[in-house]
Length: 496
Image (cartoon, rainbow, N blue to C red; front, side, top):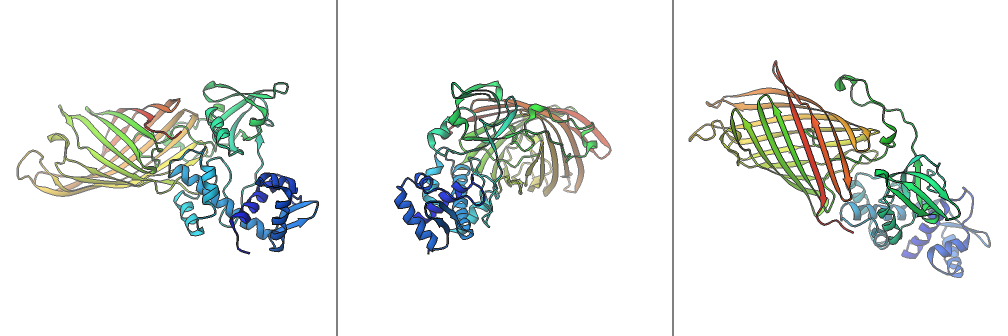
């Protein structure tokens, strides 16, 4: 029997209905018929056909249950559905409130080959946009149990893990009340007479919802977790600070992303959101200021940006070389995979005489990012290349040489509070330069920069402020400076 649209729908409905039952319990026929929107007689006829095909075990007047073969097939349907939902949100930029119905149609049309490509492109995700677990290629699915907002402890902070109702109006309600997966809330009171639940959401917002709605929001209690340090204590120059109770669970998503100062993070801008970044550094009498603006292009997978620098060195001030950047979100972060988003930049010779190579340049960077509890670890590797750098910009007939500067860098970011992070960044560059006669040499430049960042979510806007003290070593010389950072993210066309 080849799976058909109707067969797959029956198998999927049975798979989901069995989720709340014991290992041998049968799904009542009335419940199955209600889930599919058909009369019991129609459901019984189809179930008998499925039983003849070995996909279900049917007991008249008792109920029905999937066989091992039926469970595997149903899990594959569910896998397609949930991966399609995530693809529509992450790549196509659709709202999580509208993708369920689209996935209902597409799940029957796509091939397994296409689903595997989607899974790979999304970074092997574990859950869909609603927090529902995505079955693996073998059909295994995470069946962990959750509390709901009706059953979790009063007065305890919990993190929203799943939303069980896929109706568009309910998801819009959840979004409006800050109850999407990853949100942290505290159940303060349950009023049985009023059939309501009072919550305190992030930013101290008070929310009251009905008991029926509360039963559809699955949560996980925040437990005391032992932090495993991923950055050596000596790099932090102080004992590790234990996470504040308000930092949230160790596996909760970070609320500040893509806001490092020196080490690039592997996260593109979400569709409909652009970012403005202002950075200022002063070190050993020299200073530079840079403005960067980042825009998603069609989807989060592609990002375009530009950087305009302005600097002062040895009494000379002016514009530096403008950079035009493209970054590709090759991997989205998943429990088993880091985020990875290679960037390539074109460097334009727009700077004043003292602040330019007077030649086109190319920069390549390979950022990787991975969360480990309350830590985020970032690593970069790449190079800057000027194929025809001018040894004496501003002079005619000066020597032209090829200069390449490779670099590696890494950082550890620690979540002390949801919107406040401690951070230490390090950059090692092997800077190549040329004298006026064209002879080339290298300097090894190492920078260690402890700092901090914090911010505020203002509706659809996010404001981040940061500061650091970069210490730079060149050969036996060292110097300390100051770094100031400001980022402002806002929507230009967010999907409803």
